[in-house]
Image (cartoon, rainbow, N blue to C red):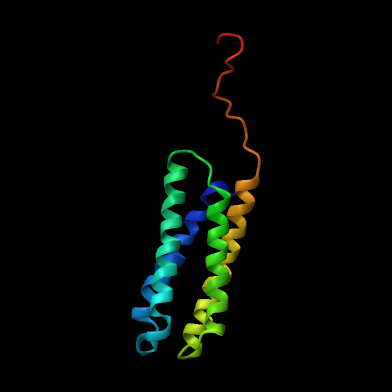
Length: 128
């Protein structure tokens, strides 16, 4: 079980969205460029948020999972709604979107789980 660390797995996907327009898509840059940059940056910000929350031993909010899933849904549908210059950017963006939707669903699922009581905390009743 990954626990609250699931959102951090979005970091490579966000990095890919930032790098792919420059390296893979090359001359097919124009229609996908700003979408991939904005979505990639948002995914990296969410992963950074998740890393900070895990480091501070806090729970990830459900809103972060919902935002990640919505970004994934947008990334899946956008290439088919807005014309792209070729099949490589279309299917690449769709594949990344599916993975983001999956991660968003996992983050939501993990955030909804009840918290376990930490054994190291002491009860305030009884004066210990």
